[in-house]
Image (cartoon, rainbow, N blue to C red; front, top):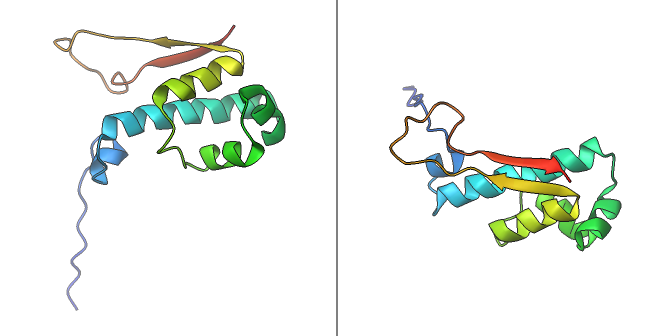
Length: 112
């Protein structure tokens, strides 16, 4: 039996590797949702408490944290962070600058 398994180095964007349309937006949203989850965990909020602060239902928070955010805009995710008491800074750099590992996306959410 022939083994057709091959290993290929992926890009830094899993969504691109999986063939998603608009992979950069998916990666950005995933970063924002990850930060929301980190804040909820750090502040020891229940999903119900987090939902109340963000103006969502608890099932919506659960779906969001399980990765179901395709229909949620980047702007809405940033508003959810502000409702959790965080400011969001976005860094824009010249395209001509050399990119370093991990430098593609720089979102910084900090407590207000």
